[in-house]
Image (cartoon, rainbow, N blue to C red; front, side, top):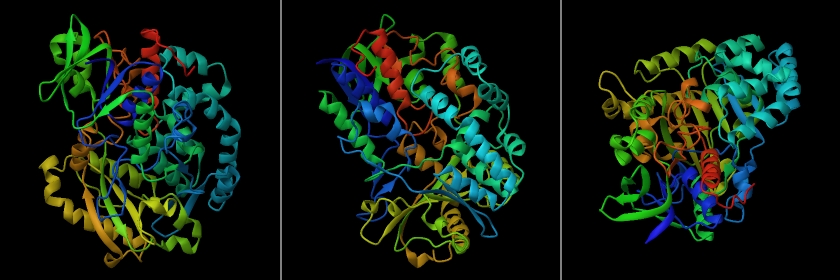
Length: 522
């Protein structure tokens, strides 16, 4: 049997792309190598029965307000979100805290406890850029990236845009030094800026940094992250598409410079009459599945130069008998009920130094901790009165001198170190309160989802040379490839890593335009 479209990989971008194409009236087959769909959007009982753990994604910042959620009727397919009122609590070594609130005025009042000037600056940023970011930045996620010259010309039309262009050349540290005076305020926002994996002293991230200051939603998928994948699968199947698991693709078949279908690991060949769409990371997609012989030399070079060398995550999945009670809650009880708690030291330079250690292959000994309890907001993810927690510490993929294999030597000790750090902030988190624990070091992350090369959770480094028009490669950011009828739709494409389905949505639009499909979502 042949299909109009074959989508390789059932990560949320692949499923979203497939759902759009199926709803356009095409026959669509999604092939997934694993026994489950979703890629990084997965929930499993990693510790004990009844305890749902979100393995690689906890929060889906943009999904509920995205065109994908609306177009594919995901709520009808069982995808619902809850919104914590208290977003993030930054806790400092002296047990003071800054809580990030959804309400801008309340957030300003929180900052005023540390600096009246910084509170005024925050209010001014909201007034000057809040609406601009909403109307400019977010729509860019759900459309193919613009060439830098075009984007710059558009930004030059407004004073807000011109300022953003200036900030784009700044490092997060420089931007924070320009905007704020209080060290605690800077640390609070810096922890948000580096969530995409770039170091605090990395140039070219000013725009994203401003977005991280002003936008701070943390929607949690009811039932766990895997429920998003389930809903997207239902959207595919509701329009006649088929999703097959345990179906690893070995090769993408190319005939006369055109993608003609795929060959599975067991030798089965399946024809695609219109196009193949790959959600698999670039090196595997092009160097292994397609083959260099079918690609221009310049394109092969760009694929080989695609890099995933940034920080990884060392993760503990915990089943708890009770939630943590932080020392900082004595000053602000909202810390305990924030979506996450972030413990990143008390100075900006602490974060800079920790990233330097990571670059040298040293798991940081200081706290680079983030903790989230989804069950505070969605009790369905654990038995009544119990909780799941995800505790993560920024870490290197390679532990020198042994490289990735070094984690087998240090993971148990490092897990105890991380728990000790956490307990110093939340003293009730004694070992007897931990009912079970599963360790996930960076090599485990890569094994769970081989799109997360080197355990980098944003699917390839989010650095200036791999963002926007340059993602995944300069000249190839429009989801097309040198092979006719072969498209890309993964998190390695614009707008990058994270759970937002932007790449799947955008790829479907390009395919519909190229192949004259019914683009029903416009």
